[in-house]
Image 1: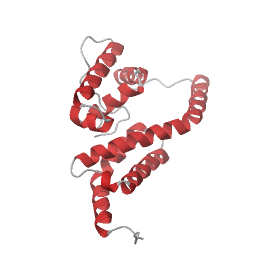
Image 2 (image 1 turned 90 degrees about the vertical axis):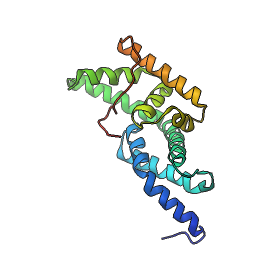
Image 3 (image 1 turned 45 degrees about the vertical axis):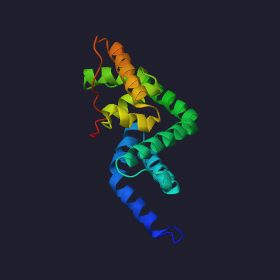
Length: 184
């Protein structure tokens, strides 16, 4: 059912934005959440924000960057709201893993990267994920993080250096594939 209060042009623009950007926003949420329900919530809240602020959503390629920024804020709110529940669930998973014995990793190299990635700060993980998983450039990352292009490139460079240091390599780690097996 269509909202009779919404102007036809706004509705059409939103529907076009949704069709064009849904797959990318879905991948973004999928890589950063633990459950299908969380993915659905992030997508819904992100597009709700876009609907409510349709006049603020830029045209063209910048619209996806705006949506990434909105999704990033939705995820931050989501994480704050679930922090206690997540901590309890993590503790229970750890206890069960100890009791049952953790399965051997299938790919030692991927497990090493996953473990090093987990040790990074949330800010480092986000900038690396925006670059590697979403394939964004420095200026695009800057738009999502709401900072200058120079600051985004510097954050990415430092995050890569920290990841390389955790992995025990001398060089910056240039590319990471999605850790959960998703494709871009």
